[in-house]
Length: 266
Image 1 (cartoon, rainbow, N blue to C red):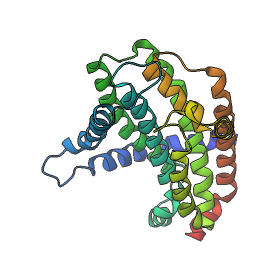
Image 2 (cartoon, one colour):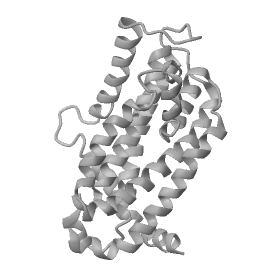
Image 3 (cartoon, rainbow, N blue to C red):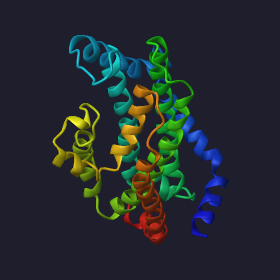
């Protein structure tokens, strides 16, 4: 019953949520000369750098893939989805502290704030993903209908990130070191996930340790879809799914128990 009540209260403020997302989206180009161009400039530059530098200059090889764009596709599919995870988690952790003045002045469900961050991050991700898909089409590497199998993977990733973010955001109100700790952990987390390198090239002992990384099966699923044009190993996603459900429940529980004290601590 706790999640249902929370969702009902949030739904009543859906107008505020959508207007906040719109305002944040528009603020990215407000006052600039080129306007919405900047929405596409940075993600386009990211894809071009990966393609030109890694695919053509460095010429890294991918096992069983002859395409000169194979490594670029492998890298982009991992980096873009990890950036979504990093942005959403990094912003969620400090969401209550960052909006302390708003929470003190207005009476609205505090759960609206993580949802605003979620929608804003997904909107940014949608833009860069559209450009990535365009790159796949132009390079004759678009996976076709199998790309739809990425949607369940994305849903698990968002559940895991939002649940973990809500839990840490609640704790961060009382222990401000959480934010700095997460920033450091995210740097290590990137390199502990096979994004820049191929996981199978690592020693067996290291591969066994990395199996505990919940992002590993998620990133691997994206890479398999985009590079090999195959649906992911669904059984391998059970582990991150269980963690996603666990953190969602833990995040809601911590938020429900401590939400009355959040404003007092800010």
